Image (cartoon, rainbow, N blue to C red):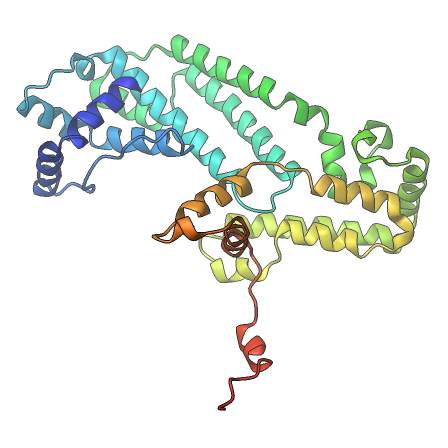
Length: 339
């Protein structure tokens, strides 16, 4: 990665080289107009930079040769294998990162994405050990074009280390999976497996309320219906690329879950308290990062005149999902009368 950043900076940091490289790409009708700069602050930067570098590798080699800039690693088979493996791996991590972003995602939904990614990674490990490389597009393409012998043992060890890293990082979430799954499947939840200490809930009352939910058909049917709606939402997500309008008409998962729990009578206060507590667990720092990014948008020539109160108000306007009915509000306001 250090070498790639060094090469990109050597081309983009100099205005002359940058302009010449851009003209060179345009001359050969390349699908890209420039390389991408790496930014440590942005979590998706590395994967995008590597992918663009891989797609422009032959053009980069030609340009560097014309400028007599020597990087022998770009011709070494071992280095190129590691590079293509890193491109494939970081792009997979980018896909996971995108799924973990967004407002209102519950901790359980995010944990499901992580567990699914780990299972897929298990197949990737088996794929690497078999040497088929079905899940490593760039590495497979490099092997097919150069007839190189891929060191699958080396990459298998790297994948195992990454898999172990994921297991350690998300261990605490997995041990509390029974608690997190309560909000979507309370009927099949064992109260002995739920961690109720952080929520200050009476265990006896919780057991009695859950027993009522499982026994009474009207209440149990409510959560059975919720499960079917969530399954319908997942199906629409798979075809969402083709039916955006249909997908927009379906309530978000969080809205469906909250609506079901909110419709319960107040006499089931303990189960509702547990459900609301689980739903308010922060699964990611996306909202915090979004607010931080919005501060740059708010900055202007008069930013020195902004008070803390005004800045807080601007941030609320930038980050809120609430959309006021401006027409109705304007009708209720009295226009300025002439004196």
